[in-house]
Image (tube, rainbow, N blue to C red; front, side, top):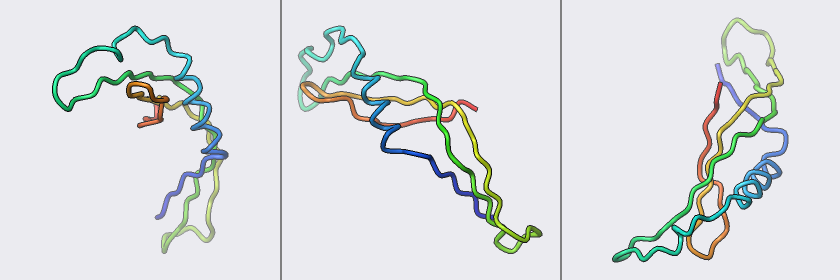
Length: 96
């Protein structure tokens, strides 16, 4: 069985999460002197609801047609920012 999750508007969601992260107050760690080739980063996480459809494709199983079910679930998104940069979405995890 093939399972596919389709988000309703992934680019809008990415933009929203990065804007929420940019509201994070920098505590000054990004300005720290770091030895060698290492870089200081700031991370920020936020929870957001995600909506989309899950498609179940029978691929030879007992189902006669594809099933599409809407879903709404929570995800934890984490963004990081390097010195003088903008927050960029790095990873996410489902909370359900």
